View 1 (cartoon, rainbow, N blue to C red):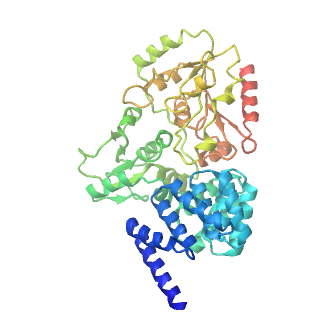
View 2: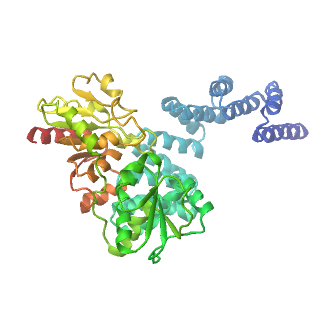
View 3: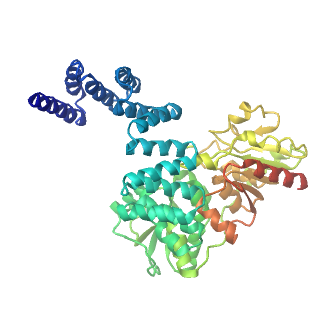
Length: 493
């Protein structure tokens, strides 16, 4: 019997090795043979299902796992793997069903408790998620991912001290876990501990991936990363990074460098943004072809930290964007056709942004606002999100400019001129908020309960955009308060 078990184990191990090498055809042959042995059928089915997961054939994987459960409903691994397939499909109802079966079979199954925590986290059942992650820690106090997700939950719910505690625990277990260091910065910004905030914010470079431009710079130039050295008579290249809004907002720090040093400053930015910055006293480039030498480089979003280190404050707004007079007059003539004060709307940011689910806003929430008859409402939404005008039957209430603006290569070329010809902008946290703020356009910025780190600074110090009024959720998901407040403001405006 022992010899027979040894033979079976060797066969299973060989199949697993083949599976891990993605030699699926050979592995399937082995596990089909094991499946045909009635004493080991469940083992064969289990690994055949796992192979199909690896091959991304989820329907066939589920078929194998369900076949296991037909003969043994308490098969722990069959239930678990079926739950994991449903998790991958974001079918959280069925996923929870099978995870609970696993936990009933074996309350010490760490994987089941962890994924139950994730399901509740993604479903915003945060108290239940916390319970599951704490169970994981009781099962294994060194299970890093429970601390990581607890950090995320406490960060989202503005319990920043608890978030710090959990991210630091992650770093105790894995000192090089740079995403946790980056998340520490968000907590420190919220707590106004700016020294630590800017220190840890430097770890965004591992998370936000500005590597392509940086690699290009390093490959071409024998230069150093600027860390505060004297730049007099030197040339420094500032690398644009992150989103369009980040570049619009923090370009102001180049003026500080120019004021502080007699230096040549180059700003390396995407081609479609060149026109936003070209009227400044800097060399704005979208490629490095005609640049022969630089002494230093630095990323744009590292400059606020350098500035704060020196001045213990933040750079004030600089209205550097020059308006194209011909385009401005064109849109002035178009918008003069509206006989009421014009309110522009923007509600949707980049859907690929990690926290877009709490940043962007459904257009349906604007329904009471756009019915106020003393205003004309226009949409500045482009691409994704603009379809919501028709879906919500708002075509008679919002004039849709999405097919008429910014059709050429320059980002926001028409939007800039429109913004300078309206009475008010109401927007979610997108690049247009930064554009309007830089242009000194009256703006209501709609923010969630726990917004992006820079708005904690703005709410406390009012240092970024004097023309922008922030209207924020008083508690998670409470948009009713926000839109009632905007409705009241518009009725009084």
